[in-house]
Length: 599
Image 1 (cartoon, rainbow, N blue to C red):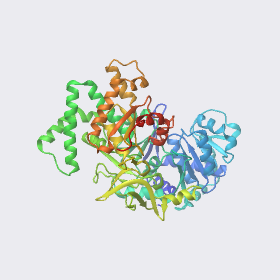
Image 2 (cartoon, one colour):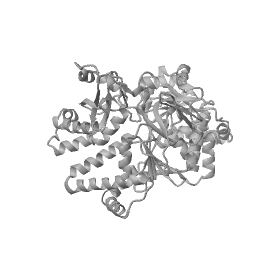
Image 3 (cartoon, rainbow, N blue to C red):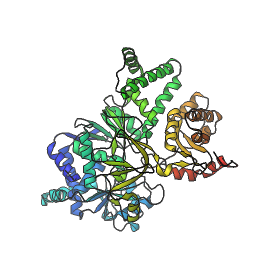
Image 4 (cartoon, one colour):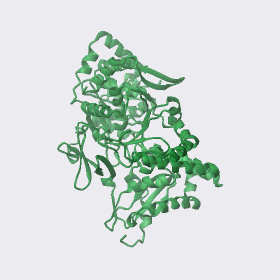
């Protein structure tokens, strides 16, 4: 099966009555079997064909993660088209750029707010023939807007008159045909459109299935942005393996949804694990006394057992008994937050601090860290339940080749690698050396496991010529201190390393309540000397583990956390380092005013 339509048609035919999707409704959770989902996808595909969809014509999806996103994506692809993904937070200017650069003829938009955003710039997107709206009751703009229900009805009518059109369009799709255009976040300049073929996605699905770590009886909770390659790969894995997916992209509902869905696996980004860790640690600290003592004891027991597991050793009778008590008193309660059936998490999109992975493993929660780029269809490496090493992103998936260049850059070759950047041949040549993709990441291979040390462009070289990997320091500080939300380590061409720190709003408000500062806002707490002392203690603890040239000599606590809306985070919650450094340039420059050159 070398195309997504082929995978979709095969899945629907093989398991028509098996549950495929769950999704939130006004009265709880709705459900679709593969047959029911297949009928909706067929109607969407036929509706688009009735509107005039041509082979490989781009259809943009401008929406958050929801069941309609998946159905629309499958409908576009089974109709012979290709999907352009756009985050709902994308600015009007970037929407215009992506729609025109991709040549998208149709847009499938989430609601009236997204429609209004497009309609206000309609003169700038003359190539868009129709906007299909998932929900809403606003003006149809003279027929330019088509409600999804109307498109599906139109598709059902088209199918009745042309019963062979759907299968013909789906099966005519070739493996070397464009499937998806995913535009990178664009931390500097305009985003680049990554061209991913049907064979790219077919490969990732085949490779993941070959590892055997996902099963047909699994239940996935999917909340990640489907406009991101990490979310998209989870969509195609389901087609190949056949597990159930419960889909709801509302981040504020994740905790409630986990308790209701009771998934067996969930994919997430490190920021989610950091937040959970901070809340658990902070909660124990705030309760103090016996509760805090039990938590520290349990965590120590869990870490000892985790280290034995990593070394493939069994615990002695005493440690096993201690862990049984720790699990009953502490760890079982944490696992219950995730529904109680979780086999593992999958972490990707950004580096996961080793200490964080070990913390969760101590509690009996396995996090399998993986690695890939949008340019490699997301899935290139992944730790497996029976082949896992903390601090690495695991071995390559079957069929992916890797080598390390002389300067330490990771190079990848395989079917998952993109065709190129859309309309940007020069940018394509910069990263594709023959069939090898230059990832821009620095790493080492050891015993078949890949360890990422940092982004090549993020490596700091101090004025004294010493190299510092900022991501490692940032991840460690966030684990040490539960009150820290984000960290940006700075120091390129400077004579020492400094840092910008933001406070975790929930964690610091809990501290404020217990320390007579409940009336203070985040900006005021950032200026509180006691808060500065909290963060300094964590920085000092981190510095004890670092080489002299790596130590953070100065830091500032910023008045607000980084947000997607302010342009400081990507949609996958990674910090836009250059944006932050430019925004707080005066703060950083003040660190080095009058400093003497040299380390």
